[in-house]
Image (cartoon, rainbow, N blue to C red; front, side, top):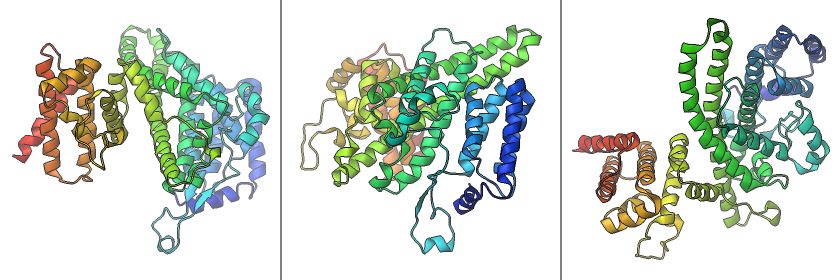
Length: 468
């Protein structure tokens, strides 16, 4: 990413040097394309915006009119090429013109001698309208006009549409609207991430509370818990859909006529990739919210929160409740969710709900969930009584996934070199995991060992053999 100071100067100069005339020319090009429904003119418009905003030496941030035109193409375009081109252009503009950035994020000597400062581009156009004082004025219009930013209830409605789409028994690979909704969600997550991450890095609740993410989740126009439940549905079912689309592509290659093969195969490939990337975006969305929850908890403990911050159930608790209610989704969720730190925390807290708590108590340990670690969870499998107790509540198959994915996440964290004990800690973890797995298997002799279990056992045995 280029130096933010250069981006800032580009933003300030966006209307200079003939910018208005260039904008008029591009908008005229767009008007012509809409009048004749001309595909070539739309592509030419997108290329012109890219050239003036990204490629040229003196780049200029597009005006709100230009942004709205690109946004409308993403949401209403009829050709795959126009939809994908508008989506990619929006992402590239986010990359080159960040909405929030720190002036101290480069390695120059001058920045080393001065404290970093968070810069917020207040004037930048946004596809999300989350601030309460503005939401009422254009909220209804945003639902009808595809070039208008989404307000909180529209964002929630988008999640609902994705949940309905992903739960359909027969998913049509030629569903262009589905592709547009998934791309729209991906773009919105990029925008939320670009605004939240720099704010969260300040560890200053005053900056964190003003993030679009925090305001969106705290909006009275959404049912937060319901939206998070829908997000989990989308995440798990799109993961399954991704596998189905892979099989669909193979069948399609061998059965389609040569005449129709080019278009539908291209759309199927695009849809398969978009489904995969939507899962990645939902993963990032979950991680951002859980990071925000941690920041909020820290601020609350330090006395920095106020009544205006409101109350919101942590996402971790919602996920645990839903995974406990729909236990069949546990393997799919853990397979798809990628962030090791949070995956491990989810596994540990899930096990903690059902395991027999350690009898020993100290001043620093009172048996609360904050005392839970993966190593403590593994010790519950040290005897048949404990193994039978927890397996009866969860089931041996799901337990196998919890242990295997928890082990992989813990191993990933330890392998980063941040853990005390180094190689010794890795070997101890592997030995405890193998012992727990053997206890699970001996207690449930008919249990099938899945590929994830075999992989984790092989990894653990290999690490132990390398140490010896």
